Length: 345
Image (cartoon, rainbow, N blue to C red):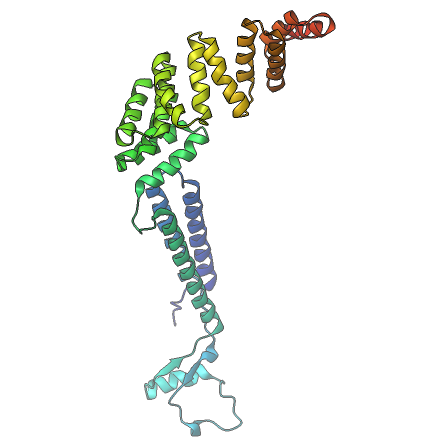
């Protein structure tokens, strides 16, 4: 009995689908792990492509019996009106036994389809590799690992994922000990973690490399402010603002530093610059300015600023209480009533 050594085409189709599914799973895992670690991305990408290759390789290839023809068969061996493909397998076997003459194989549409699939996959892989290279490699063609870590760290920081930002900023500046932006980013995360002393060390590292780096000076001043060293913060911010008069984050911070020391005139001067020149509007700024002018006896301006503060946040009980004190009659009654309601809630 003759044993069939060829795999069932349906088995090959199932195996191919399994390989494709595994490959797609690893490519999806690569996409989801993009911001975690570059090495993980490479691993998932390589495994995914390997299983895609296996999927194409396992595709069943159907053979058409009409694709085999004898190249040495004599023209006299067939009649002009006989079917040239009739009993071809019997003829082939007898011919091979008697003469051992070679056969040539012509490609079928199925084989062409499989070849096209391989070509398309190769083009896709090549394109993807060049795409990855354009992201990971600089204009000089050299890999800069620190830049990739910094970019991921920035994304983590601004999305509020400070633990991941901490790891990626640290990887960035350790990969490049001259990377001042990464040092400042790492210091900012340390400051958020209330590690002000460690943050100051990182800002000093950046300033030692680039003394004119204003972001490092600003964040160093912010760390001093958070530690209660308001004089040191003012000392750092003053030269920054002399060189950058529209640096409004620094303007607000120096105003806060003066306010914390109860130097209200100086605080109001800086707050007014932010409010008028920078068009900065917020509940906190309006509330602080209203309180300062209130203590100075400028009640009309105080009322306007208190009301503006409520337009940004209508839940501040103290503002309702103060407006109820400053405003007479029905208008004052409204604010007094609102203050009572908020206290009860």
